[in-house]
Image (cartoon, rainbow, N blue to C red; front, side):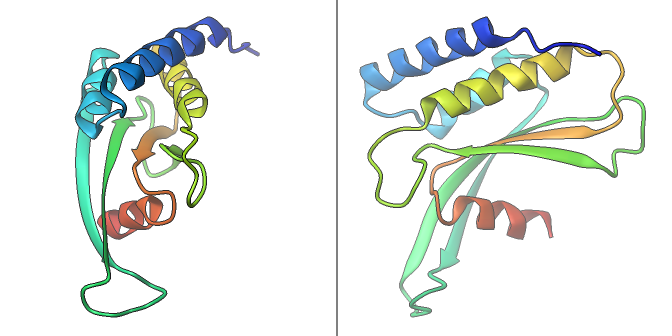
Amino acid sequence: MENFGGGHRADHYLKDLMDQDAKEEKISPQYMQNLLRKMGLAEVELQNFTLMDPVTKKPGDEVRGTNVFAILRAKRSSGTESVVFNAPFFPRNGSTKKNLAAIALMLAVAEYFQSMKLFCLSFYVVVYTDYNYGNMGMYIMRR
């Protein structure tokens, strides 16, 4: 059994995210995309989505957002099984408090799994801009 010793890495990512947020007053999807690439993740993409608001269902009531995702493919299997780690920038509807600590921890966990030589699951790392609809946009993309 192996212990996760990446707490210091999560602290490092949190500091980077907080510095970027203080400098720009936001963290852009492009910044997250570049950060995931710097970590050495090869499959990193932006996914822009537009969904009709499922509550009002009125034409013109569209929700737009951007998901950032990276895939760490299983090295020792067909890749048919996967685990998805996801976190929104804002943890709940209407919140102005950013979810940077959860994103930093998710990045540290992704880095930890990337360093492992043997694993049989693929790992998806997803950061989405819209709490309510970002994961829905990801679901629609993968169907």
